[in-house]
Image (tube, rainbow, N blue to C red):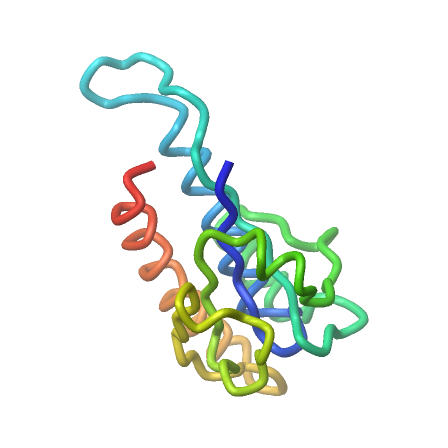
Length: 145
């Protein structure tokens, strides 16, 4: 199993959304092969997320906009980014906080440079959610899972 690690400052919105979308779509993709209609083998990747300075809880607007996609992140908890997480990750995607992520190895870290929606409208959260979803779909295609 290979780990994809999504990192943002508080692990309360962007990285949680990315983790949820990745695991949702990777599970959806593994369930059936459209050509043969057979169940595919188990997935090769799983996503986790963390923050450099985790919040105490997931942002309410992040929960709302993911519920609109029928994905529930309300029970998730922000987690602290650790050296072990970075070491174990196959690929690391920072949400726009790469300068604040000194423990992510440059050779496997890509910064998505996404605006932090904290303190902004639910509309801004939707905009960021939709950008993340598009990137996640492309990433899964590139990984070939």
